[in-house]
Length: 286
Image (cartoon, rainbow, N blue to C red; front, side):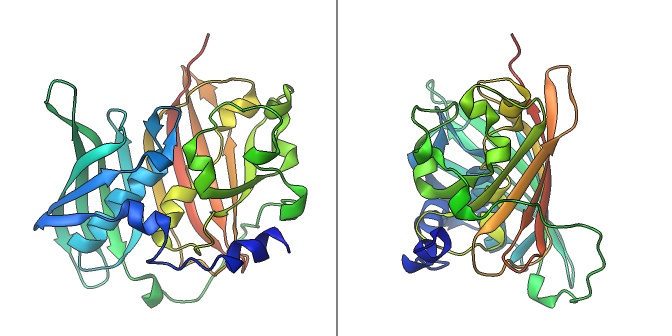
């Protein structure tokens, strides 16, 4: 059975999967939501930024009159950790086709003080109402078939950044972007992979927020190692993804002053560009 067939044989459904349970928020009162951040989405000791973005995205989907994130920009203020958190939302504007809101996630530090972890501003609409006209010069990334790509389980030794989150993903990396794992990084800031959730759940707009931040950092293939914390991440969701695994391609063109950008494209099984993102991340040099 192929990787794609195995993925769907598990038959987890949107709304009833580990991702849905772990991003579910409980409305305490209008605009205030509680959640217990799962340790299953951690990288080293920090909670993955894409998972956090999906948590806030789900809270905003409840707070706003439109269901789908069209654009969402996040500033990561302090590192989140597994455990209780509070999300506070505020509606900025509602219109016929778009509504805009902001949200922040808070936790308590060791001294019992409330600390803001992440703040987002987002515009929501209904992806099903968008016209079908597409005029583009963008092309899907050339990635070998899934059975010719490699995941974390294929590595003979643990690789930098490996963590609990890898058990929740179907992640198969293009061998052309795996030089770093073999001790011979190419020097090119590229990372490409097939992406899905390990329990077989198909992608939806909220899981796209995870997909853009789930691959190993492009800094690894540049020749650097260690944690690459996100400073800011903006995601554009372009359409509702078709069933099946996604293809994610990330590129970095410029590392300067200890910061780099990561530009991501996410393509679905119907060869449609379903999401784009740009991330600014800090690199630990020396």
